[in-house]
Image 1: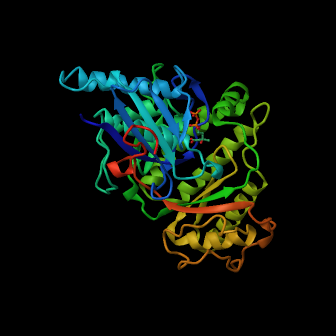
Image 2: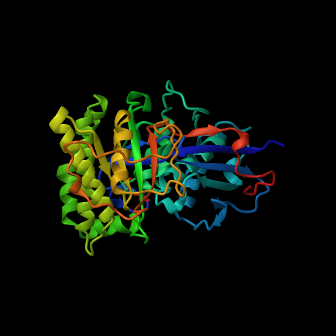
Image 3: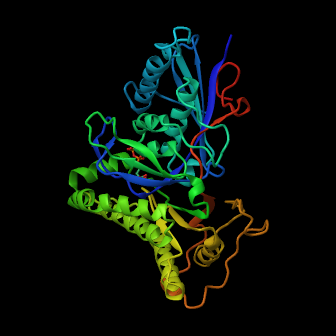
Length: 418
Ligand code: DP6
């Protein structure tokens, strides 16, 4: 008997133009378009194994080994229904010999290689991996089995983004590598609210990202709840939707296409600032950044000030999602300096939170602070207690979902999590 099983992985994405607000909360249709950078799966990824078997008595899901309830008509249930429908219409109705996988139950196991405690959003990579894995199982799409620079995603990656979007809005952007726009669309049925690739990861390989994992201590307001309250109460959001995002979307697309770091960085920082401003304009207000986040902004701003004075160019861009962690985009050549600068203000216990030196910047040792550069106003921040920033992740831009080999399966012979 054939085994109907596939394993796929999908990347994390971090938006430069933020998605914040839904015009339809069931279909997950946004109030504005957004644009993100896909981070490398070599560092951060979700992996999902899906198996379809006529003997399974119900569809089950395990997240990091723990079984999760699948709520009828909930986000996951709706994604699976869409995938089944596509399997039926695109494969089974056209080929009477194809097994009726659309009618069989699934066992799905998903695993994030980054700890949830790191405070990094996993819903985008998670729903993208789930969509890619079931789509591959159902023969709907051909994601590459290894990263390849010559790979151009098939048209159906955008179609699949329509499905991932219904799991978590930002997940639709994780169906592509490189630079990805989520076009908000106009149709009430959401058929035109999809992700498209603006440029592949090979377009700007020197663009790197540094994630500063900030200790938050408490769990903040979820994106889903927070953004709906913003839609209901913030007048600033209306200004953002109408007057700000449309021109920023075209300006940042141009900046990416021409690899204009100055414009890319400025727009990214301004959009992060405005997203946090609309969070503050929500009633009651939402605070996602904390004092450590603001100190990181002050340090990057001072670094940019010095650099503009010396070279006329910005060197780094910060951006923050619905939490205190910073993501810093910069060109590869500046990463080491930025890490060494940050360590003056944020002592990190690298024995507890190892730094994966994927780009061999520190010759096998832990990163260490270097003297503060000349001309840099060291008083822009105080020195923080140890582990205010509890870890650093250095990564680059990466590819979209990959289909993995049998050996990566998360399910055992019986179809239970390993
Ligand atoms: C701040 O995609 O997590 O990261 O659609 O309700 O699941 P839901 O929300 P989600 O929101 C992400 C918000 C953000 C900005 C962004 O990624 O664009």
